[in-house]
Length: 244
Image (cartoon, rainbow, N blue to C red; front, side):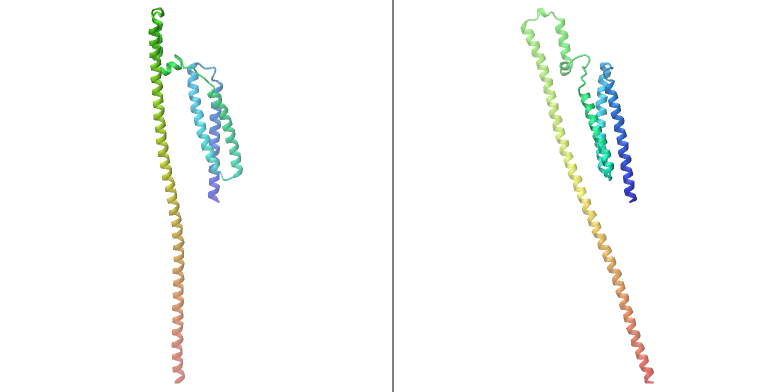
C-alpha cells in the first residue's frame, strides 16, 4: 500500500508538471500570434517558424500527458486530467488554424524565384536590359522554353528527392517493425523466465517441506525403536528378578 501511495503521488506530480508546461507554452504561442501583424516581414517569418516549433513541442507534450494520464490509478484524477487534455487539444487546434492561415511573402522574390533558385530573376534582369523591340518572336519563344526547361528540371529534382524520402521512410518503418518484434520477443521471453522462476520457487518450497517432514518421520521412528528396545530390556530384567 505504501508503494502504491508513492506511485500515485509521483504520477500526480508528473501530470501536474506536464500540464503546467503545456499551459505556459500555449500562453506563449497565443501571445506570439497576437503580436504577429505588428512585426516586419523578416520578423514575421522568424515568429512563424518559432510558432511552428512551439506547436510541435506542445503536441509532443500532449502525447506525454495522455500517456501519464493512463498511468494514474484514480478514476477521479483521470477524469480531471482528461478534461484538461481535451481543452488543450481544442485550444491548440484553434491556434494551429490561425498559424496555418498566415501567409508570409519571402522578400526578394516569389514562388517561381524560389523554384528556380534565383536564376529566373537573373534572366528577367537580362531581358529588361535588352530592348524588347530588338527581340523577335523566335528569341522570345526560345527564352520561354529555357525558363520552362529549368522549371521542369527543378520539379524533377523535387520529385526525385520526394521518392528518396519515401524510400528512406519505408526503410525506417521496416527497421522499426523489426525492433518492435524483437522487443515483443524479449518481453515474451522475460515473461516465460519469470513464470519458470515462480514455478521453481514453488518446487523448492515443496521439497523443503518434504525434507522437514521426512526428518520428523525419521525422528519418530527412532523414538519408537528406542521405546521398543527399552521395553524389551525392561521385560528381560524384570523376568530375571522374578525368577530369582
